[in-house]
Length: 253
Figure 1 (cartoon, rainbow, N blue to C red):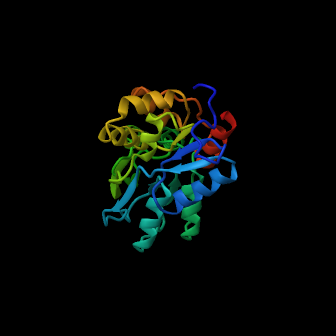
Figure 2 (figure 1 turned 60 degrees about the vertical axis):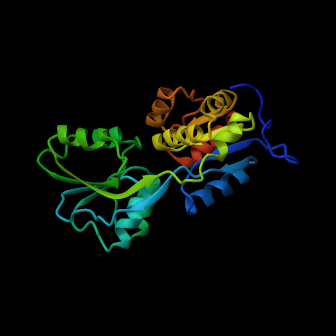
Figure 3 (figure 1 turned 90 degrees about the vertical axis):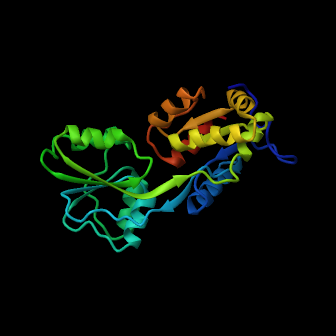
């Protein structure tokens, strides 16, 4: 990262440009509003779109694991409820969505990751039926870890995550040296950003542009993915929370 904060800001603004890749729904709107309140210029470039599969979580589990706000909302909209199962949520946002749906949350791991949940459940689930309800890009760390702990694991894919066809404006901006920071909120956003850059014929230049920017990753798995692709990461917040990521990157800028 070089000291160039604000170099990519649009004409008439001295605010640093910060790319955000949340899906084009309330998450992106909230992210843009947050970034504006932090005094930076948001560059919204959704790298994920949600396509529901129509599946619902099974209803005969001892434990149900939900990993995202999107999964909670899709399950609730289908009329599903956890019944007598112990409900586990990865992250405060997922837990809040569960409570908004009227469900009590029994466990939120201290570390908001698949490995954090496995560690929290490892001594509880031997012989238990565990339902994992999430996207088609869920980490095998969760299901394999629960299986190794002796659980009978079933996974329901509630939605697929795809890259929007018109994504990649921020990659082109980075290639031109006009991006000051990027907020990668999942491993898939990293892969999709680079795929979008490849489609636009600017992958090498976009990667070079990130070297002169502040790169934030929402947690260690996202950081590891970025580094595997050759993207250096400058900021990883203590908790896997988007607002904390945004504030940490702003502070680094």
